[in-house]
Image (cartoon, rainbow, N blue to C red; front, top):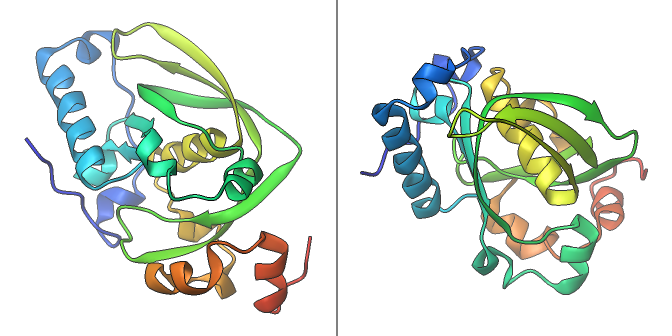
Amino acid sequence: MGLTIIQAGEPVLRQVSRALTAAEIVLPATQQLIEDMRETMRKAPGVGLAAPQIGLPLQLAVIEDRPEYLKDVTPERLAERERKPVPFFVLINPRIVQHSKDTAEFYEGCLSLPGWSALVQRARGVTVEYTDEHAQPKHIEARGWLARILQHEIDHLQGRLYIDHMETRSLTTLDNLNRYWKDLPIQTVRRQLGLNTR
């Protein structure tokens, strides 16, 4: 069943979510919730969906960057973003235990702020410890676009949105992002927006 994605301004999006116990994770209701979140994320479409975005203050997110999402992105932009397909996985009670010192800045959007995008600087690499849908401990070392997705979804679980980190002058509608900015190198975007180049 498709779930409703709530929008910015809903109080739950600004709450710190609670952790799930191992017993809760394996409940049929939680397993069904994960399936419903997967379906909702794909239908949106998006590359991640956190439980607060469907109104539940739980430390649970689903992530998937499907090959078809990459087909209209130029090889140069894919390389610049270090972006490649990511199979579906479930992130429960995640903790970022290490950030890389190097950062990357790209346009980011959110299913809870539809129609908008802005430049967001994030660590280029992260190490995350989490629990999977079978209540098993896991860790992942991610770079590039997956590291960005992880940071974005973990932010949701801490009551943060990408607009808290954005370069405010870069805020744009998706139509204008596609019209003017999406195929430009970030340094060119910053220059044209009158921002310091990094």
